[in-house]
Length: 474
Ligand code: ATP
Ligand code: MG
Ligand code: MG
Ligand code: MG
Image 1 (cartoon, rainbow, N blue to C red):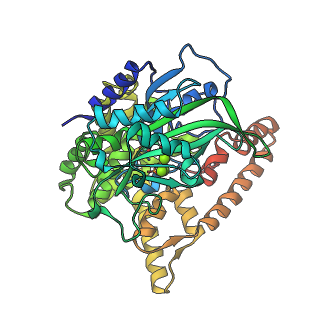
Image 2 (image 1 turned 90 degrees about the horizontal axis):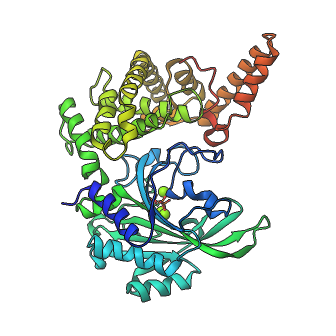
Image 3 (image 1 turned 90 degrees about the vertical axis):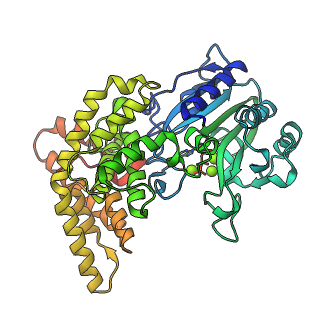
């Protein structure tokens, strides 16, 4: 069975042989890009090259890029554990052409890699193209020999990519693997029709061919470019004959260790499986974020890290863990992936210490908060109601350190919803109060700085409610 490490290596080797410069992954924390919370795709480190603002001594590149999709435009947090294909942290294998080759070679290279290098069965592969992109459809037939009935035309939402409201954009084309009719979600299951795991999207090819101006007009780029991304975890699952990314060697080490510790077997029960998957997923994000210099905090990016730790810790509770355990799973991530990512090894001891501290701190209030939540739900139930008030959600957040995700997880599981708008109102009121308190303290300089920090916080526009929490007590 081919390992994930071997697939990563083969991918980079293959593109090196085809004239690509293999570049290291950039940090999860984007360098000088205030428009982005975290690196969420391979193209992020090349953005300036695509925009023509920077030149390198190569026009073709390949990477395996660390990505995080929590908060911001792409948020897969809620998908984790629910689908078999989404993670918060994942690696995106990508090849890039900066005004060098275009559609034809991009299609040829990708198709050859999956069918020849990896030997995937062509009969199980499907492709999608953008509705109007006849050129791509023609090339899939000509270059890859994909029959017309396996080529699906999708709309703007799925298959048209744009860097922003203006700038480079263009149609996409994706490769899907059919994982079997028995996985169909229903009679309407199909590419572009549902979002289940039967047709697994493995690779997205972006054909950057237009520039969108402020008035929305598309003009052809003089030198069109290519940006592609394939999830390592997904292609590994396909190559290893698994229907879930979590069944691959990338996750099984973590899952089995935890299952043993908790005294459960994986695939024994739905709830424990979800917990094991969420913890394995979050442990990787936690380890990689810390290795990239993030620290848990109450705002912005740091709060994303804190949320991940607390959410994973709560799932650990469901498995019966009463002591810090994420410090050990993060440590295991270092052992398993440190060979490929030396930054993990470099921050190992620090990481373990920080995670343990976070767990101990949250461990002190978790039980109390859970009791409050349970009581509230029992109360509501007795009254025939099913919405947890914004006030309770805010109290849990403010006094017991519960990120809204946790309240949502628990509420949803028991058939309740959360008044998120009410929660935000309470948050806004508190924010205002704390600003006034600062302003009244007489220290105008500091108050000004504080207001600047919280009011115009760089990350604040991306994650809304959960970033402006400098007043939170925990
Ligand atoms: P999906 O439709 O399955 O959510 P996507 O269209 O959002 O995927 P892209 O933005 O096209 O994904 O990213 C390129 C590739 O990265 C995908 O084809 C997939 O292989 C991988 N990928 C995307 N999101 C995730 C994730 N959350 N976890 C693991 N792999 C992912
Ligand atoms: Mg997605
Ligand atoms: Mg998609
Ligand atoms: Mg896609």
